Amino acid sequence: MIFRNRRCSSWHARAGLASVLTALLLPEAAHAGDFAAAASRGTLHAFAFALTAGFLTSLTPCVYPMIPITISVFGARAASSRGRAFLLATAYVAGIAVMFGTLGTTFALLGKAFGTFLANPFVVVPLALFFFAMAASMFGAFDLALPAPVQERLSRVGGRGFAGAFLMGLVGGLIAAPCTGPPLAGILAYVATTRDAGHGFLLLATYAAGIGVPFWAIAGFSMQLPKSGPWMNAVKSVFGIALVVAGLYYLRPIVPALARFTAKSNVVLVGTFIAVGAGLALGAVHLSFSAGARQAVRKAVGIALAIAGIFAFINYLLTPAIHVEWLRSEPVAVAAARAQGKPLLVDFMADWCLPCQEMDVKSFRPPRCRPTLADFVLLRIDLSRENDDDSLAPIKAKYHVETLPAVRIATPDGRILAEINHLVPWQEFLNIAQGRK
Image 1 (tube, rainbow, N blue to C red):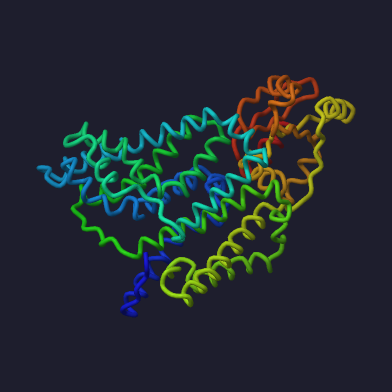
Image 2: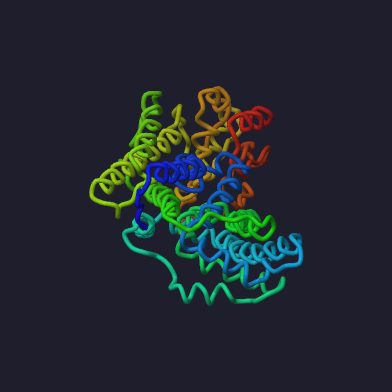
């Protein structure tokens, strides 16, 4: 895991590859520190993030060196035609997809309990520390990898043929496990907050498809992949930066100072991009901690600048443009709605619900929303610790709330006029609200 710059051209080639990898993943990480931000930009961004993260996982030392061996074992290289080789590779990737998809479904079904845990500092702090430890591993502080004999044995589970390739895929995630942690943790955390089992399965299956891209490339198109080498550490550095940002992101609700690490100004916005650019230029991704003290210092400073810029950019995006006053008592809000002759706008949220936080900023807080919000009595129901408050269950039942995010427009007597059960842009929110006043 040491960059040995024997030739200037070699250095530039690796730096160029690092820039490409960074361009693929860091824009998503910069938007939220983990998968939640990409998902907040829409379904297409969510699946693009999952696919890209899976592909980058396949380029790590946990997976990449085993690809040719694995393909040979299930028979794709010896297949009679490219079509059969491609189908064998597809069967292998399908096995990975089923394994990860099942994991996504499980986290979605356990979402309520998981979300409640994320409201507890005694859970969030260890989770953040785990992310930081994983980041240290990505930067080379210690190795996370299954022993080579174990990897090789696992890669041979199944055997030749379609059934054998599928079985090999089922255990393929175990081979990749040490390097799947960074992106997988973020995706699973988001899936748990949405509690959507079907969506969770598809997202994790898409992540698995990303891991399978090199397998399809070799088996179906007879491509020759680049040799394993130090460039794989650039991928790990990208994951390491994303992990640190994810850890800081999860700490925001319990460390208020982190949430204030920004300002809603164009100067700060430009500064975040300058910091990230300077960090990458210094060597946050393409340099190594093991190549001497000078490079280690440059890389450390570069990583610090990149993390600071990305995290400040996240906070910039999450900083509301306007202030909105919400009532917190349902009876008080209903009485106010009757007295003022206005409908209710009820927002069900939780501290651990990442899409809810995104919706608060992007759907309710744009300046153009202020006149429309004034036409409603605004009520916010906090479900962060719903297991400890028996009064919340009847309110959820009254407004037909099963998942988060959940927004209801209702009359004072409880008749529901409109439902929003997913993150929507402010323009769509205004169309719904103005149509149901």
